[in-house]
Image (cartoon, rainbow, N blue to C red):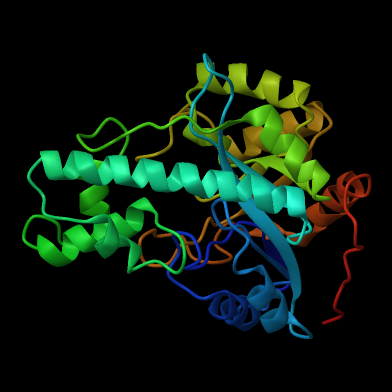
Amino acid sequence: MADFVDLHCHSYYSDGEDSPAALIQKAVDLKLEVIALTDHDTVQGAAEFLEAGQGKINTVVGVEISCDQSKEGVKDIHLIGLFIDHTNTKLLHFLQQARERRITHKLAVIAKLQELGYEITFEEAAAIGHGEIARPHIAKVLVQKYSQQFPNVKKVFEQLLGKGKPADVYIPSCFLVDAIAIIHQAGGIAILAHPGHYSEEKFNSLFSYFIECGGDGLEGYYVYDEQRYKFRPDIDANAYFRQLAEKKKLAVSGGADYHGSIKTARIGDAKVPSEILTALLERADSYRIQPFKTIKR
């Protein structure tokens, strides 16, 4: 897969299954040009990721921040920051606040599950994670305890944890404008992740605001799950979003959103061409603190 990159991957420091070093090795085995670590609301794995990739592959430190458009706007927006300085103190403070909201949310989800009759505790779910707790950790506990009802994590989401399901709980997040600002503050660029997860009406509202807030790009290469895709079914969504980004003079990014066995997409599956890096790096020039160093392969 030479000449391809993957700029959306998760490790076990958020809700993925692999260590940062394991992600690096998989990318090296696939002969990818670049891989990014974009864990949810945390950069705990960044140092390990950079060390594992040294001399082997080009690495990009990122983060995926959960946010809301506004009190009245679109909820549960995922914003990817790429080329960030993971030691930036303002970013770290911002992510600590996000972590506290995440814990509050997971406590509420578990309380709802207990109301529904499931025997599960926060401590059981937290023990599965590596410093963070996410819904897949909760799902894995339920798979262990209720294997006849839930043979796998996907079934837990389909029956309990997915959008509109009995244990779907909403907790307000930070605002989009603040998430974009902190990414820029940390030297990164702000990418709207998997835009096909929104209905056309919600996307149009969100996209206008995203541009107004200084957003830098769209994911135009992504492996959509049929259950989560909500945009127009009659089009090639990735091609549509790439054309829209070009029209609005935004950069294009992409990746498989790899998590491990809990999702079907593998590293590299989005087939993101390395040529997109040129525009991303040009966009990043006005924000980033350290230059991107290319490893010749």
